[in-house]
Amino acid sequence: MRIILDCDPGHDDAFALLLAAASKEIELLGVTTVVGNSYLENTTRNARTVLDLFDIDLPVFAGCDKPLLRNTVVAPNIHGSSGLDGADLPSAKRPIEKLHAVEFMAQTLERYSDVTLVPTGPLTNIALFMLRYPHLVKRIKEIVLMGGGIAFGNVTPAAEFNIFADPEAAKIVFKSGVPIVMAPLDLTHQVIVTDKEVNRMRQMGEKFNLLADLLIFFKSTYKKVFGIEGVPLHDPCTVMYLLHPELFEAKDYYVDVETKGELTYGQTVVDLWHSSGRSPNAKVLLKADKERFFNIFFEKLQNLKEV
Ligand code: RIB
Ligand code: CA
Image (cartoon, rainbow, N blue to C red; front, side):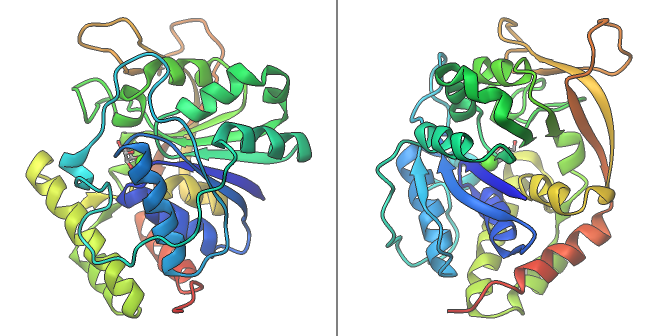
């Protein structure tokens, strides 16, 4: 399957990127970056650094450096000031493509009619693409996104970071009519990286040792900020769904995004009881088989070459 990964690396974005690149079932056409976990300059550098680490031949297209309407929010308390703190990674060498991420999406969707968009950061690039190229929206096969929460948020009690960082963009995407698969916090918090997974990563080789260092940092910020032992591997849930949808339980719900609430700005409002009378617009992932998830995760990462 053909995908574009739109990301804000970001520790978990980095693993989503590596999982996609390591999976022969996926034709990763390109990587687009957006402001989110860190400023665009950082998320774009981080995406290039991760690809360079394993000599993965893929173009990186920088996208939006600010949300559609709201002020810019970043998450140094979780991902560090670089957006990918915690490991002594070689500096990025590959160039940033000249084409803007949104233009790359347009050219790709003009060429192929079976592309899945996989956003693992704020939905700014996706929404801007939809606004700029409305005639190409129907050519998007599916959007498989990490974002939102049913019962809780992580930036505010109501809002999850990717949505909170650009609620207006998220609303456009959820109202677009494109088939959506949503991996909310309620799902991603079932796929927790513990010391067991860090040690398993460390044993895979020198480069994986650096990845283990990234996980240690990511775990430390979750302990500090949320008091959680272990860290949810949010973004790879999107790629794992594409590879093995049978690992997940899901239900179709109507989902909308709050863009006016004082306490609820950026909340994904999931209509669990169909009380809105609106037809479902998203397949919401509810449960994951953690054991099988990590077995497949590590099995796939073995395909990455130690260059
Ligand atoms: O709330 C978790 C999401 O926000 C993940 O995508 C993480 O990378 C951050 O972007
Ligand atoms: Ca992310």
